[in-house]
Image (cartoon, rainbow over all chains, first blue to last red; front, side):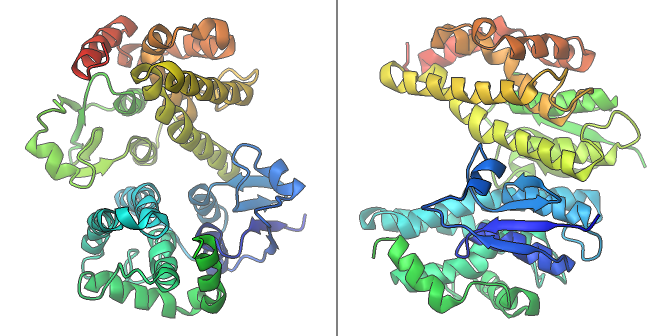
Amino acid sequence: MAEEVLLLGAWASPFTSRVELALKLKGVQYKYSDEDLNNKSPSLLQYNPIYKKVPVLVHNGKPIVESQVILEYIDETWQGYPLLPKDLYERAIARFWVKFIDDKCWPALQKVFIGEEKGREKAVEEAYEVLKFLEKELKEKRFFGGESIGMVDIAANIIGYWLGACEEATGVELLTREKFPKLSNWIDEFVSNSVIKENLPPRDKLVPFLRHRFGL
Amino acid sequence: MANEVVLLDTWVSSFGMRVRIALAEKGIKYEYKEEDLRNKSDLLLKMNPVHKKIPVLIHNGKPVCESLIIVQYIDEVWNDSSPLLPADPYQRAQARFWADFIDAKVQSVTRRVWTTKGEEQEAAKKEYFETFKILEGELGDKPYFGGETFGFVDIALVTLYSWFYVYESFGNFSMEAEFPKIMTWVKRCMQKESVAKTLPDQKKVYGLVVDLRKKLGLD
């Protein structure tokens, strides 16, 4: 049977982008369908009845939802480029940082850029506390995954690309090279990687979109 | 090399219980260290500097944190018996989805059921009921969430059973009346030694919560 891979996503969503990066790194052919999140398609509602969100990966008709679940599925289903380390302990550590990014970083960044101005200083301090852990985890590595991009780097795309776009959209400076030299270097590596840079939403489209989204 | 396994935990934690069930399923010998969360040990702070939380599994001196990540680690390292996750990648994805759902939707609402009053509690109860309804739907007529065998999703959820009496008492409802299928599943899980020996008595948990509520100024 011919393999059929479909991705339901939203072009501006970092979670959708994670799945695209993973598929591209694995060299998987797929069809992309962009969703209007204000007018969700019947397919989306059928494939993800519980959360009604993107991304949804549909592999031979069977849906998988939640970006971190999808990334693990992609790594287990398609050989070639490994997203997770082979070493089982390192694998648990990678999963820990992916969860940290989703549970702690994402809400902290949202508070900074979407939150009210009067709470901003506190939100920035809290975001610094969170980012410090990632700065420390990088150590002397080029990527979180070591010499090459891994699952943590993919999950950290919100820092690698979306954070900069949010800074540009709002005028709020968060991640400076002075405060976060390692993360800044990592961001440079991330956006200049050949696979990644071809698969990010264009900055000149994303920034106005975010501005509009934040009500600015 | 000797396999040295240490678990930092608290007896009442439904997250820690998941790890204890997984270790029991695999027949792994380990040293259990009870933490006082009001006075965290140096070891805990060293082994989980990011969250400073239990459970933490320390395997040959190296820490693994986050209960579901620990359970997956245990399954992958001790892979010669009692698989906790299915072999098929699609079924593994389903198992991971439902375990994540349990953390994102169930664990997040249960605390509100016994710590709030009035309108806030009614809202929490409504959310709790909706979530368990979805879980009952997913369980269907299967003996376990994973199908024929006890696995990852069962481990993720069954540990809450020791807290049901707390939710029922303070939320004023009956799990048996509202979710009979869930209770049938619970009783089936409790027939497993790994579950029965791990889960503390419901009345004991209730006793702790009564004290905790006084300290929180709720009673």
